[in-house]
Image (tube, rainbow, N blue to C red; front, top):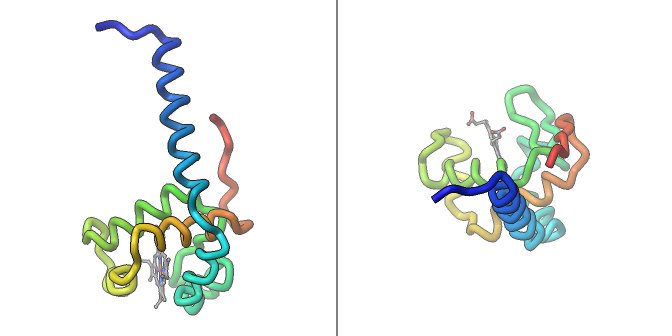
Length: 113
Ligand code: HEC
């Protein structure tokens, strides 16, 4: 079967929209509350107080959620983070990711879609 460029573009747009809608369902305020346990290392709003910990503020929500899933499943290995994410549900991870993504950060994501 042969797809036209238009159909491929429409499919891409649909996929991206679905991703954005999924992210929009996450609750930033709930995420802020759930991220209290992360402040010691990642700062109040995701700007880390020390170079030993990565900044999270302004990072893409999709990246943060996938990273937390990867720590939980063991795909990404780190003793500290691996131990912390064990108690987080999928909803917790979505909410926390939405909170950090909403914070002004050192990252400046380019909106190119
Ligand atoms: C005791 C310190 C500590 C605490 C508390 C902590 N983290 Fe981390 N976090 C780290 C370290 C160290 C890394 C880097 C680990 C690595 O190299 O994979 C990290 C990495 C991360 C990353 C990956 C960042 C990237 O750019 O890939 C995310 C996302 C993250 N933490 C989220 C959280 C969340 C959410 C919480 C609270 C539930 C939390 N962290 C609590 C120390 C901490």
